[in-house]
Amino acid sequence: MTTKSAILKAVRAKCLDCSGGSAQEVALCGSGNCALHAFRFGRDPSPSRGAPKALARKNARPDEGLDAVGVRVPPPASAPSQMEV
Image (tube, rainbow, N blue to C red; front, side, top):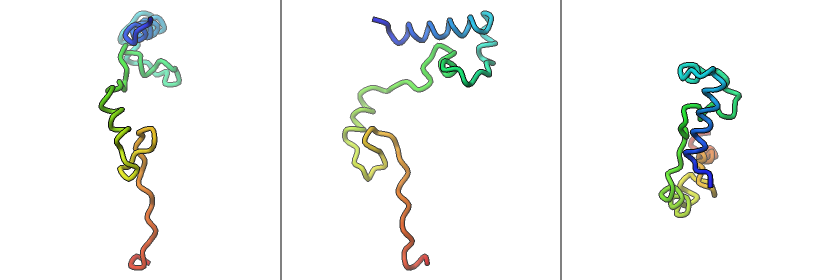
């Protein structure tokens, strides 16, 4: 089974190869349209936190600003009251 760390190491190796073996060039890489760009340092830019986040989604109420999959959504725009008109 391939682990997350093995995948990240492979991405880092690919980025080094693409940059001529220079870690500095990897850091300066301006190829933002590359799918590997965010992972070029061999790290996950947004690692999952595991169970606590899953529990938060499971226990979240709709009025707490999270949608069904746990993504924060902006509060609905309120209709102007008679005082504001």
